[in-house]
Length: 245
Image (cartoon, rainbow, N blue to C red; front, side):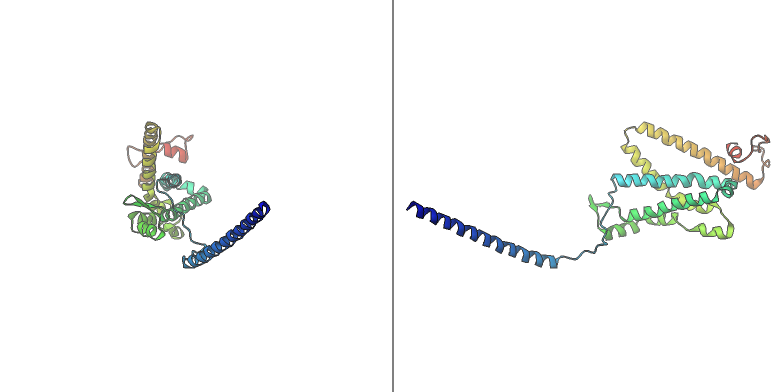
């Protein structure tokens, strides 16, 4: 009798195992059917869909604004200097061309980055591509960025290599100010940063004053004004002496 009960239990366990396996197969088939139905209803995404969006308050945007600020500072210091002392253009034309168009390339990339930079709308970060594009193109900043890249360089063919034609690159100063403001608010040493910024402003004023003074006296002729005469020291000649004078 005991042997019969054991055999009966074994048979029941085998039947229950088979039942569970069949049930699992049925459930798996139902899930596969459901996935096929829902998968066909989903919109197909192309492989070229680029959904990466920059966080305007993130580190990537901050470091990128640093790169754009360096490109602006290059234009800010070099354009007026080359305009005042045009003899340096003749000696290193290829180098100036390479640096100029590398800075322009950064400006172009900045426009592409702005197209993919999110913005806050009622406290919500917007990441939709269409909204980002419309928001950027409806802002004044978009037209300022386009003005920065005005291709006046084609006039080189008619009037020669004049760095003054790149003056619209200086409109990018708003990016430099934004970078300074953000750095000052987040740095652990705000006083040191303000001191360095003030020192830069002072040096920039001296630099532009020296270059503009040289331009004025090149037009009027050296010695035509009592408050400025060219140095007669033969040991001090060239661009460096004219600049420091």
